Image 1 (tube, helix red, strand yellow):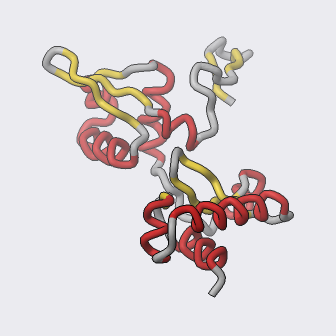
Image 2: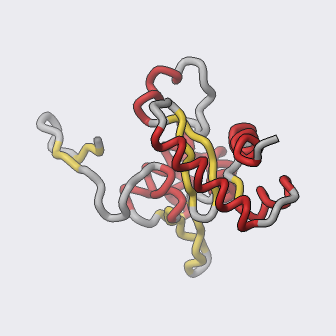
Length: 166
């Protein structure tokens, strides 16, 4: 079997992004060979007119749907993040840093689960502050949502005068 096809199959089937070391160990191939074939595959996907692409997340890779096609599949695909997780990420994004007490106040019983799940996914990190914690977004959040840190497109809503992120 062709190494590129094996890499493609692994990236397609994997629930989480896969690193070069993991690909090499699964395929029982040298990392330099896997890296070369992976680069060819990424180039091939970028040149093809397809709805799928191979995304790089740090030093890991995964197959994703190009953003142009996300609206079409929304009714048949399960979202990766729940509405509550997105609400919490939005809260932290808008404030920059968010105290544990504020998260508990807004999300009540769900707060510990939401925090734990988003930390596990690598979207937020916690910092000790006195006798509590402060939550911040990680680089993975910005990369996942394709947002450049500190450069959010913000407009003033004409009706309310409040800021709206587009």
